[in-house]
Length: 71
Image (cartoon, rainbow, N blue to C red; front, side, top):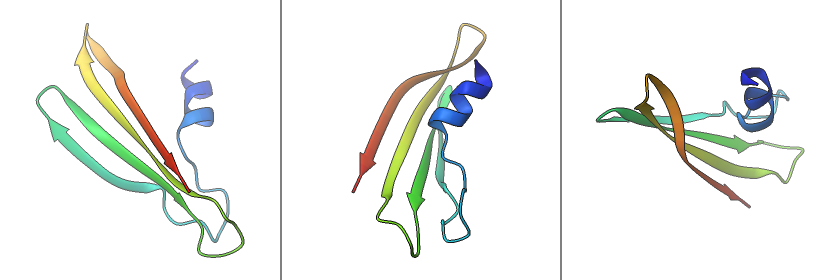
């Protein structure tokens, strides 16, 4: 399950022309917000970002929000 989530949802660098997907990490209270981007310097029309809102709840971190944006 965890590997399936990572492969399907978390952006990975798949090409030498792809920028580093990590954009920002913001800590707050009992959680954090992680923003990943997908941008290629050449060879693709793909551009976008995904933001995960994660909170410590019931003894583990849980994704409580998910926003995506694509151009």
